[in-house]
Each structure stands twice: as C-alpha cells, then as structure tokens.
Amino acid sequence: MAPGPLGGDRRSAQIEAHAALILGLVDQKSNITLKEIRAELAKAGVSAGIGTLWRFFDRRQMTWKKTPPMPRSKTGLTS
Image (cartoon, rainbow, N blue to C red; front, side, top):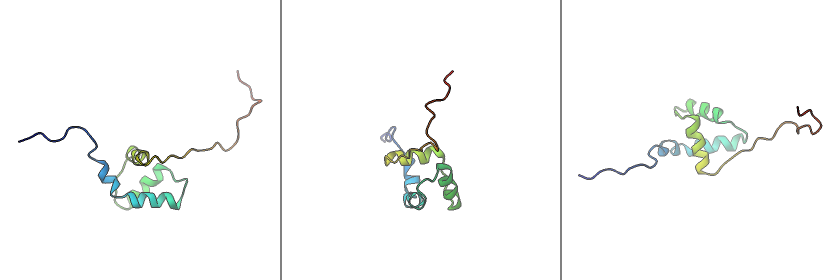
C-alpha cells in the first residue's frame, strides 16, 4: 500500500464540469453577479457557493471592475 496524494485541489472538477453553462451566463449578461450565477446554477440542479464561483473566475483570470455611478466630489467636505 502507498499513501494517496497530499494537498492540492480535489473539488474544482465539480464546478469545471459546468463551465460552459457558467461562461454562457456571463456571455448573455456581462454584468451578472456571482449571486445571480449561483441562482441560475441552482435552477439547473447545481449547488455552488460564492467562493467556489469566485475561484472559478480567478482561475481564468476574469475580473469585473465596477465603476461608480457618479464621480467623487472634489469640493466636498473632508472633516
């Protein structure tokens, strides 16, 4: 008998199996939130947490920067 492999990622394959669905959701709606993706996955019978989805996109180096609705005031009070 020999010991099994130590450490490493053992669960990402579960979410990677649904990569086409997740990436398709992002293609349909570019500003979709992780919570919305999670809800759509639940409709398809897939259970995934927010952290799982975040790591899924992190592996693909996909990020979305949100822009503020208005620029900051440069003349505002700064007490």
